[in-house]
Amino acid sequence: MASDLIINATEYEVRIALVENGHLVELYLERPTEKGLVGNVYKGKVVRVLPGMQAAFVDIGLDRTGFLYVDDVHVGSGDIERRVGGCECGQPDCNCDTMSTDALDRRKPGMNIDDLLTEGQEVLVQISKEPMGTKGARLTCHITLPCRNLVFMPMTDHIGISRKIENEEIRQQLRDDIEALRPAGTGYIVRTMAEDATREELEADMEFLLHVWDEIQDMNSKVAPGSLVYEDLDITLRSVRDLFTPEVSRVVVDHVKTFQRVSRFINVFAPNLQDKVQLYQEEVPLFDAYGIETDVSRALEKKIWLRCGGYIFIESTEALTVIDVNTGRYVGKKGLEETIFKTNMEAVKEIAYQVRLRNIGGIIIIDFIDMEEEAHREEVFRAIKEAVKKDKSRINILRVSEFGLVQMTRKRSREDLSRMMCEPCHYCDGEGMHKSRRTICYEIFRKISRNALKMPGASLTIKVHPLVAGMMLKEEAATIERLENEVHKRLTIVSTKDFHIERYEITWEK
Image 1 (cartoon, helix red, strand yellow):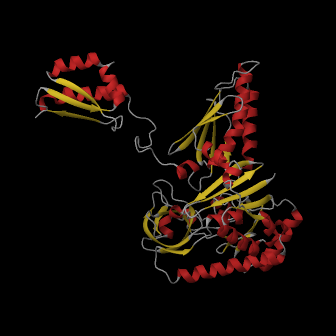
Image 2: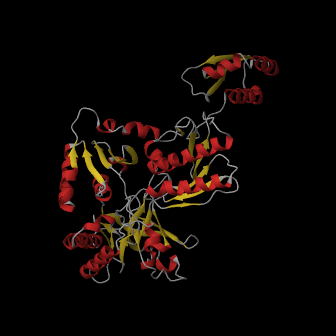
Image 3: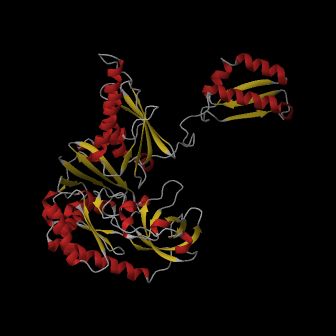
């Protein structure tokens, strides 16, 4: 599959697109004011231990304390795969392939959070999940340091090999090389990109990672709690490190300084790929030239049309994301069941694509159009399992429920695209709706009836939005007349253009 890594860099924002066969499949962005934190290592201080949650809150110097779960404090070798969710490098947003591990010891049963931590204790922690919404960062004490070919786990005596390396001879050779090179008591994961790496390249990566770990330990002994000890690569170099695989045909950069940084990085860690890095200097903006801007705009819409004429509707809440499938304009040719089945099958591909592109995580509920035939339901289930195989995030899918729903979970490690690029509506506080004109009219009428005695004078002036004023003067004219007779006051409606539709003011003569 032909892939390109497209880097659009400016002083205020960096956008990185992974394009497969001409289609945008993954998008990453970073702004200096909202820089990502996953992978950073901090010297933290435990501020609160919660036995009821088997977790602790740790001050790492950010606005909100980080969350440290008990299994991330006392980490045994066997916890690796569960903790990193199958990701090679321990950084959930890096899009590595899954690794292979053996069944090793887990945390001893009966070991509680208050057996491991006390308030005021200093701990070295790494951010494994970005702060999201009102939640602080997810932390782990099991430090992982990725390089291009290897991931170093200084506190774990273990060797893991990427599952994507299928040749058993190569796997065994890599394991033997790491075993011969690694210091006693340390752990390494061999990444997919190391399949063709020489022993010298593996040794160079290992020496680099050991040097980084020595610097982290040295810095940890010098700084105060709440300090940054190690900062991971920025999104540009991290994407080049993790996404620039042999399957990527080229890396295209439209910013000279960024191009130079990427070239130096590649020259050190993968000099054989240097000729794939290109500087884009055309007049047409890079994302426009690849048609990426259109895909980005489409990824922010709730309603996505399918080629057949149907559509899917994506709605996210704090707890989950709901995807609804509808036939829309599609009427089919053979019969209702065939029309429904074809719409659902086309929706499967678009749903898998949108979930990956938007980086939707957590619980996802898909409401397919009800299908009468069991064979069709099974085919849709198999199709969605096949469609999500390209997604490197961990996904679990349940069969179609008795209500016709498919439930799935996708590992969440960072904010999804809409949360990164959008903010709640300042008119409706993110509700997406506001009070109807008639509701506002009746709210005003009730307020006048309730407070008429407190409003002296013979007349009242009601300032409202033009749409509300129009309804009061036309559809609710009879109600206005009855209200005037009830409160014995004349009501004057004033249309005010600069009012929000829900805003109104009632004034009276004094």
